[in-house]
Length: 191
Image (tube, rainbow, N blue to C red):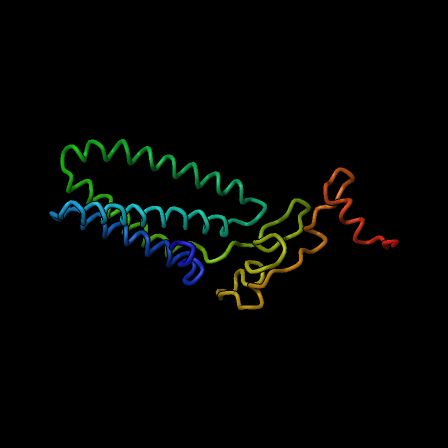
């Protein structure tokens, strides 16, 4: 479901939908429900939480410029882990005191997160490469490079696969399993 929404709506709306669905599901769980309906709602709420989580990773990978993508995703992971530790340590005592308050805090956190997602950048900014050359966000063209900074969504032509430029294609060396295949492709065949 997340992949379908990411393709059709884009990252920010998809994440907002899943955060809102998770928060609404948590609030609905406060109502007295038959066991089967409560379990179904619990599973749907968990699915919404998984939806925003997976969508956040996709958007994070698209947001950071290629030269700093690993560092950016590492920082995102670090803060996600710290938030998980803080939530577990602060919500457990609250749950013991008042389940209503604990669920309200979680639902409020989902609503706040949905609002904050609106401030995420649309595309990654250009970043200097190792040699000082400024590359588009996707490292050399393509969708993010073509539409970066323009405030527009890419058109159909930009979404088509491209042949990598020689600058981004790694050279084949003698130990490469594809070297023989590549050499055979350029040699005449004697029959």
